[in-house]
Length: 616
Image 1: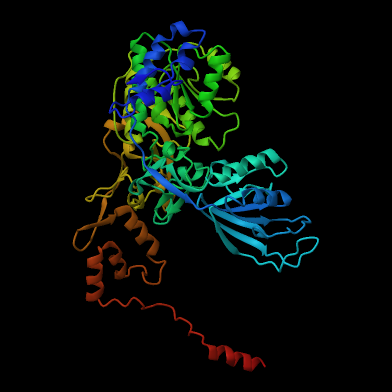
Image 2: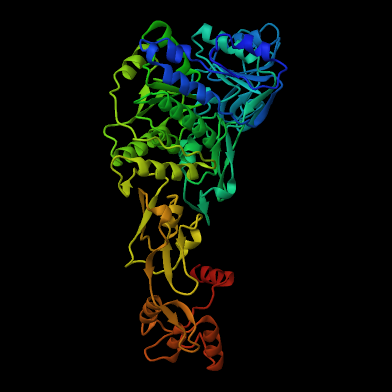
């Protein structure tokens, strides 16, 4: 059952309690009916109801446990006052840094120590701190707290941190770190709000496991050479760290922005709220139902529930509401959306995409803007005029309304695609690109993409390539291939994820990445980049290397190395395979040290002592 009312959701939920039917709630009042174009919003309502009918798969949780051990980190009496407010509820320790003159407490109800936090890591229930300048107070302190001799490098563990120091936050994107509370020590109301929040953080808390990770698909590094590092660059909380050839995602620290999953070229990291294919199913249902009900010029407005929903509600209640062709689509985090969602939206008949962001985002949104740049290049390259994909950065509902109402009608595909697919992001993106290319106004075969795109080819300077095939060994996806019969380097563009491992591994540095989308790549066979004649063993005629490389080696050695004088028969062994080389050297009793310059005798301790005595 789908209920088109969220205001009375508790009433309907109580009524349906105990029944097996699934109940979904969708807001068609603030998002559609309450608008200057409310009478024309029928197609939008149909689309929103159709999207709500798509099932949302369950997602896993991780459990964070807190026993209420809190460290209050401050610089003056404000931290001590916060400790007094929490002493009856939590296990409190107050740490003072850069202490001012503080009067000792009449009764020591909780520890007050001195120290400076050098490093902090962890999450709710498992924080670990490295403390310098640690010192305990002297019980004999009279008019001011006196401390013992300081010590450095101590380790402290706690469940919660209340930071009232007013200094630089202990964590990147600190607002997203569970269990880390921070307030301005000069703002009593902010300190009180943080104290009240800390009181409730005791017990077990279920947190969504936002990202699922498959290490076997990760192309971070091979043989200690770094390739793809997109997720490491984008993670705002530091939840992603290198772990050998792969990376590791700490689910307890992850805040769910989803930029790693949106940028992952192989699908090793996938978002779970919801998975990418489920999200495309909702988009498909919404846009196809909107089109079937007579809607035109659809603009999809992606927004999060906390920020975007509040702005849309305020615009509907106190402003002109949303235009009838603007379809709001709520997600957990706007930054979770990848290129496949944008391309699929256009294939399903959307005329434009807008991402609603905070005026001051809680974390870096560079990954989303990279997605926008790639999508805009593809859409414009296929003949859709103008900038169809944009971000709206505002906290003002009036500014949001002004921007949305000023969107000009734009062309769409003549007949929306109807494909419905399952799988990881790369498969979804491949199918969406194929469908959009089929329906585009001006399809082209190749479109250049910005640097860092997960699609593309490679450019090889064939004159400098020696066909050592180290790039083939390093390629994790099989985009670069060889031939067991001949010295050949082949390339399959459809398998390339632009990880850069071939570029990093190449000893001659003749490989460069070429980000692009080639719509013929899915059907194209492997392309031969370079091919040479094999070097045949002069004794057994077995191929054992690249002919040009063997000849270069022989030319460099002949007459220039003491082992291979001009006309010396030993030079023939360079043109033999490994087996024949050993046999020949054994038959002709080659002495590898014949003609070698005499090495100086090794020097021992006695030699140095003898020289010292002679000088004395």
